[in-house]
Length: 141
Image (cartoon, rainbow, N blue to C red; front, side):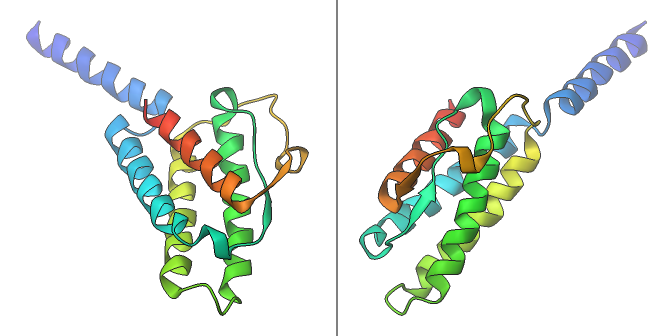
C-alpha cells in the first residue's frame, strides 16, 4: 500500500512539472539574473538612442511579451555592437539578457490571442528598459 502511495505522489509531481514547465526555482533564478543584467545595462542608458517595440500586454500574454522583448534585445545588440561609445561590458550584458530571455521564454507555455510585437508602440530605450524590468519583476511575484 505504501509503494502505491509513493508512486502516486511521484506521478503527480511529474505530471505537474510537465504541465507547468520548469521548477519554480529555475524560473526565479533566470528572472533574478535577467534583472541584475538589466540593472548593469541601465547605467549607460543615456548613450543608447534607439526606439524599440515595447509590449503593453502583460501576464496574460507572457510568452508573446517575452518573445517581443527578446526580438528587440537582438535589435539592440546589433545596434550597440557598432557603437564606439558603448562599452564592451554593456554588449556583454545585452548578450546575457538575450540568452536568459530565451531560456526563460522556453520555460513557459505560449498564450493565445495575443498581438504581434510590431503591433506595440515604439518607445525610447530608457522606457523600454523600465518596462522590461518591471515586467520581469512582476513575474517573480
